Length: 302
Image 1 (tube, rainbow, N blue to C red):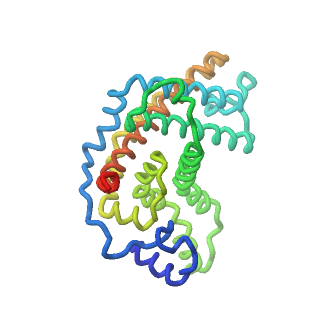
Image 2: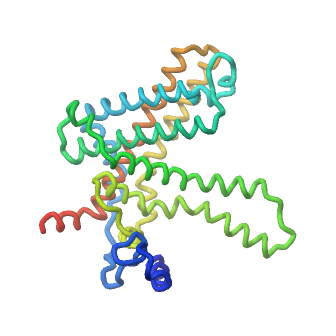
Image 3: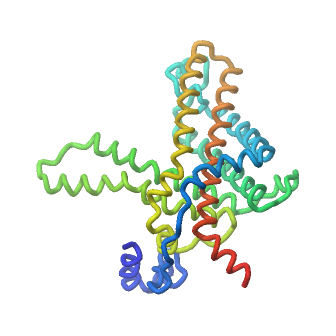
C-alpha cells in the first residue's frame, strides 16, 4: 500500500530528489520486493537481557557514567526526579518550570543516550576494544543518532497531543465536519504502531550507513508488525515494574528532602532508564540483523 502511494507521488514529483532513484521517498521496484521474513519473536524477546548479562563490564561502565552525567544535568537545571512529586515545588529542592531549560535538558539527555547507545554497539556488536581512547572518540554519527532518538520520541508523543486536542476542543454542530476533524486528529493514535516497522532502521545510523528509503524499510517488515510489538512486551513489563516501584519507594523521600536524597534518587532512576534503553537498543540490533543482516553479508562478500 505504501509503495503504491509513493509510486503515484513519484510520478507527480519526478523532479524531486527525494522521489528519484535511491531517494528517501523513492518506491521499491515491484520485482525487487522481498519475500516475507520470518521473525523469531521469542528469541528477540529474551536476547536483549542476555546481551547485558554477557557484557556486564561494558554495561556498568556506560550506564553508571551516563547516569552520573544525566543526574548532574537534571539537578542543576531543575528537573530532578523528586520534582515529579508535589513536594518538589517546595523551597527544599530546586525545580524549574522553564520550557527553554527543559528543552536544553532533553537535548543534553539525548546526546548522552546517543553516546551510550553507539558505544554499546561498538563494544558488544562491533568488537571494538574497550579503552580510554575509544571512549573519547566521537564523530557526527553521535549527533545524527541523537536527532533520530529525539524524532522517534516526539512522534511517539503524538497520541498525547491528539488526546489533548480532542479534550479541549469545542464540538462542531455540523456532524460531518466533526467526523472529519476527529478522524484527522486520531491519526496521532496510530503513529506509534506504524513506527514499530521503522525502529530497526536505527541500526543503519548506529553503523554509520546511509538511511534507506522508506518504502524499502516498509517492505522488509511486511507482515511482522504484531510480532515486533510483542518482542518489546517483556521490556515494557519490566520497565513498568521498575519505574512503578521507584515512584512508590522514592515518595517516602519527599518528607526528608536533602541534597543526598536528590542525587541518589535521580542517579538510581537514570541508571534504570539506561538499562531499559540498552535493552531496547539490543532488541533493535537483533531486528536489524534479522531484516538486513543477509544483504549486509552479501554486500560484504562482494
